[in-house]
Image: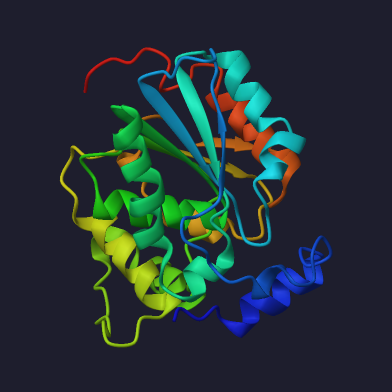
Length: 257
């Protein structure tokens, strides 16, 4: 079972993230994972699918409420959308990667989607990277909006080492997985990958309280320049970032890598 660091929980509680649902943190994962599908040209399905993964204490409906789904549809009709209820319970129990593979990738295979993009907001960025690390050849690209990568001590250690290229990952205890191990795993994968694999796009608010997590990602890893807009770690900022991404949606052309 993955465990979230107490300092993170305290910080999120004080920031008001728990006000929407005091019981959110205690939700159990279900199989299959719940999701909401949007077809851009119903009833037909497109060949491309954009999968949206929410952050800590967020719910799928917020992608609709805050306009990100409407913005995506307005920017390109080439891809259908799938908004996934990948809540924190999956991360706590070490089940996020398994369920995303089973409930998103297998579904996409069964429905004939041959191109998949991931949009990860905050904690959803960690989920997107975990899935891409497991199935790099299946994921075309990832848009990371203010990614929260998990363990604060690991992120700090990378900064103290002078960046990912100079960082030596600590050992992972596979017998007792922790959130720390997920952070180590995705950062090690990013450090060691040699071209190819999913395209990465990054955006973050100028005053984001978790900006250290975005800054640990080397700009040389990105398929485009990092987008920075005024704002903190909230939906208004994420929508502003997403709108910048959608000025030229990376999935719009369908060009082969």
